[in-house]
Length: 118
View 1 (tube, rainbow, N blue to C red):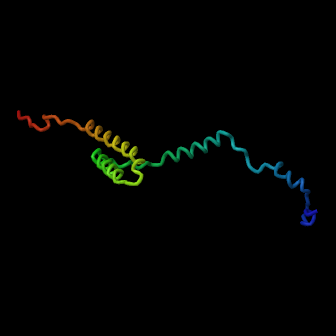
View 2: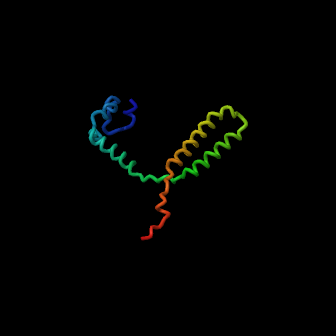
View 3: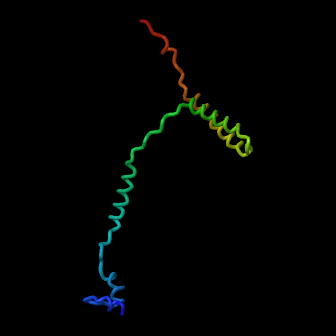
C-alpha cells in the first residue's frame, strides 16, 4: 500500500524490490589469479621501502652505556630486590661486550712499524 502512495509510473511489489538485486549483476566477479596478483603487488611495494641503516656503536660506547645502566639500577632504592635480576642481566651483557671487544681487536704486526731499508 505504501508503494502505491509513491506515485511511480511502473509500481512494483515489495517482493520485486527485494529480488531486484539478485537478478542484476552489477560487477564482474574477480578471479583468484587477479586477487593474488593485486595482493602480491601490494606486498612487493612495501618491501621496496628503503631501510635507513642503524648508526654504528663501538664496543667502547656500548660498554660505557652498560656502565651507566648498571649505575642507574644500583641507585634505585625502591624495589631494588626486583631489579637484581635486571642488574645481573645487564652485567652479563656488559661482560659479553667486553669479550667481543677483545676478540675483535686485531694484533698489529711489527712489520707495519719497521721500515725495511734495502
